[in-house]
Image (cartoon, rainbow, N blue to C red; front, side, top):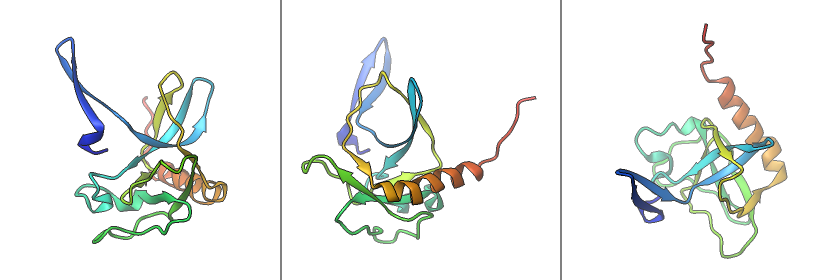
Length: 143
């Protein structure tokens, strides 16, 4: 998310940012959904220092051609097409899905659905990517 999409607020002496975030919904439960975030990394995509390209994939508007940004290494997962609901919506060229970062979004949050992942891509790319990243994590039990 770029700084232009964020606003700084203060409330009771604490500062916080409020802005728009984009996610892919990968699972839904009664009161929340599990999502993976979409980042542009300040329009640097996976060339940004500290970003692990092997956990990412390109997300792009159906009908367009997915491309790596200049100097970007090969990503870990195939590109995913999104069918947007409105012609006025867009997906920045540097948008990357971080399949390793699961985020819970409560259903009482204000959301705006801009489109849906191509069903074939969801089944063949998104689900296996989330599963692979989950399996690659170090799982520990509290004993």
